[in-house]
Image 1 (cartoon, rainbow, N blue to C red):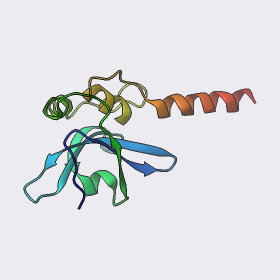
Image 2 (cartoon, helix red, strand yellow):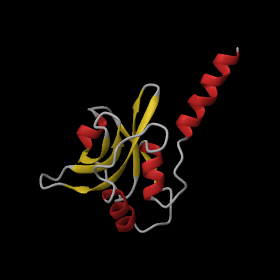
Image 3 (tube, rainbow, N blue to C red):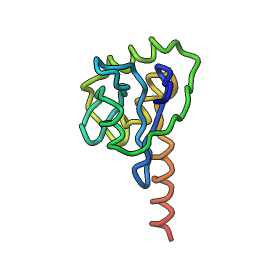
Length: 121
């Protein structure tokens, strides 16, 4: 089992995108917990890593800020139940916001540019 640092951002590759979440702790069974804004669930939720990753291999993205991990997790948990929105509140927006970074989605930006290029060509 890996050593996960609380507040660390992880992702699982769901072709062609990455689904991001934040390591938030451990449950009573010792399972790693992850908070994410999930399209599948329709909202921000905290769940075991195996459920978050849907059995796929998770990858550590890193720790994108200098914020205290307890602050990051408190911010993330404060959003549990908040509705998912692809364009303004997706998983990337969520993890960046929890880390006090500008909420943006590089994947969404990339696919928007790609779609625009395909329409023009």
